[in-house]
Length: 309
Ligand code: GFB
Image (tube, rainbow, N blue to C red; front, top):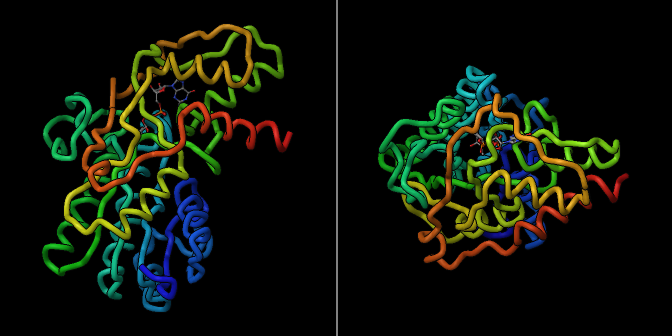
C-alpha cells in the first residue's frame, strides 16, 4: 500500500472505520474515498456496483456492518443476517470485479463455537455449535471469511479476514438497548453517580469472561496486516487476556468513581461463557496491543463523559 493508492474504508464513521482512518492519516495517507450510508446503501447490489465502477479503489477496508451487543443481536436476528450478508457480498464481489489490489474483511470472535476450547485458535472455526444469541451475525461473518477464501482460490484475489475480539473506543454506541457491555456500563455507572442512584444493574450472572481491545490498537493491527499478511483463512486480533463481567463492572465502577452497589440481573442472557483469543499467529508476525484496558477505559470515559460535560 503506498501513498498514491486510493483507499476505500467502508464504515468510515463507525468505531473501527474511523480508527483506521485516523491511523492511516497519521501515517500520511490522503487518498481516501468515502460514502456515508445515506449516500450509498451497501445492501444495494446496483448502487455498490456503480460506486466501485466509478471510484475503482486500490485497497478496501471492509469495516461496514450491522453490529451491536447481545440484546441487539438476539432481537434483530433477520437484520443481522440479511444486512451483513448483503453488505459484505456486494463489497467483496465488486472489489473482485474492479480489480481491488487487496481487501481486509473484519469478522468477529463470535464466529467460533460457543464452547470452543480456550484460548481460541483460528482452526477452531466450524468445529461446533454457535452461541444462539448471535448465530445470525456469526453465520454472516463466517460467510464473509469463506467468500474471501473462495475469491482467493477461484480468482486469485488478495482478500484477507481478520477476527477481532470485543472492541471499545471512540465513536462507540452508548444506546443501552443496542450497545456492547463496556460502553453500556460506562454510561450506567456515570449516570448513577450523577443521579446518586443506590445501585447499578448489570445483565446476566457476571460470570462470562470477555477480552477487550481498544479500537486504536485494532486499527493499528488492521494496517499492519494490510501491509504484511497475504494468506487465506483467518487471523485473530486481541490482547490474549480476559476478565469476568463482574471484574469489568468493578473496574468501570472504580474508574467512574461510583460508590453504590452492583446488582446482577439474571433474567438477561449471559451469551458465550468465554471467548479468549489465541493471538499467537499475530504475535509471531510481530504485532502486539499497546493500550492497557484500564488506560483505555479511563481515556474513553474522560473523552465521552467528562471533557464534553
Ligand atoms: O458486550 P455484549 O453485549 O456482547 O455482552 P457479547 C457481553 C456480556 O456482558 C454478556 C453482559 O454476558 C452480557 O449479558 N452485560 C452485562 C451486558 N451488562 C450489560 C449491559 O448493560 N449491556 C450489554 N450489552 N451487556 C456480542 C455478540 O456478544 O458481542 C456479537 O452478540 C459480537 O455477535 C460482539 O460478536 C463482539 O460479547 O456477549
